[in-house]
Amino acid sequence: MKGFKAAYIMSALGIFLFLSVMIPGRSIFEKTETLNGSVSMQKITVSVKNHLDPIGSSLLSLKDMDGIREAMDGRLISHTMQDTLPISFERISVNARVIGTDSFYSMFHEVRIKSGGFLTQESEQRGETVAVIEDALAWQLFNTDNAVGNQISIFGRTFRIIGVSYKDSSIISKVSDDGNANIYIPSKTFSDLDANAGISHFEVATSDNNTLGRNESEITEVIQSIGKNPTAYKITDYNIESALMEQKPFIAIFVMGFNIIIWTLFYIKTIILNLISFFKSQSSTDYFSGIVRHNTLFMLQTASKTALAILFILGLWKCIRFRLYINPALVPDELIDISYYINFLEEHLRQSALNTGFIASYAEQLFIHAKGLSDVIFFTGFIPGLLLLSTGLSLFQRNTLEADRILLTVGIMLLLSTGILQLLSITYELQAVIDMKSFAVLCSFLTASCLRNKYIKPGRLENIVQIGCIHR
Image (cartoon, rainbow, N blue to C red):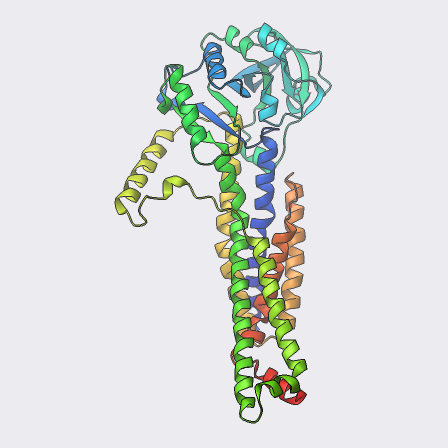
């Protein structure tokens, strides 16, 4: 009884953890793409390393941004400067995150407008005192989100509210939330009212989703062209980060699918070995043609099973194959080059030390936390989930539970875990994403795990030989 209890707990927990890679893990990636607006992850970002620049010499000006736009040959660019400042209306005063930006910001980040509109190029060029605030801030100040046309005070100046946006309440935003609502104003206005302000973050849409480091090299040259030191900035290629995040569920599914392919190959091998054994046993009393003629049904059954198994492998391979991304920096010119890996580790540690204390913009904080959640889900769900599931199924078989009973049990666990994880995804305002191909591979893995001993264990298929003799 204790063995069965452990088997139930381990199998259920293993299925739940592994499914978490497929459902919430995939949903986190989809939400991250959404939070990055219509440009999505096809961009590269540049942020000032604040702790290395205490006097603000690395902050960029609007003139610097004009130079960058010219160097980038008209490519879509957005920039931000931000600070936490008091926002007041009559006698009410609250702190908010004031983001000075341009009209292109909403293409790089999800800004869902509830009423009114977002900043325009005209308001940016004229340096108008207008603002777009989140609905949560509107409720704090006006006790309503119908705030378009109202006025608030920032920098001691009066700003007219031209738009109210929704506050994202997904788990990514909740993890990143510091209690300050966002308010967007034109960057020229921000710069005019705060002489010490400077652009600390900008992002550029890339022409393609290249992951070979070309984008980073290009942006490094652009930074040098305006007289700035590239080492003072944290450069993040979202194309590479996207490839790393997106492939995690596919890696998990590939491992499962590859195991099934190995088991199926063993199954085919067993069929072939038993067929050879059958011919050897019959060849002493009959010719080859006679054996085939007298055992036609058995031959057709064997051929059909082998053909279906091969077709299953081909179909499964189409479901699990994907383009694996490995950072080229991790691949040395020679396969075994210890000095290369030592130098790479030293450089990684050096860069990590330089980035320690880096103060990210709000938008980049969202991405950092999304990436962290993705890593936690993957590393706690993949290997531990697979080990728990394999151990649980082994305990079921060790306690001599019939294969069909095991299959029914894990099937129920699978449906319950799927429902719970989808419900959790919806609760935390993530898209309840489930890839049907991946789900089919998982179902196949569970089925194969429950039945493989029944069909692949040595000695099981001697029954086929006996059936063949009966047909004769």
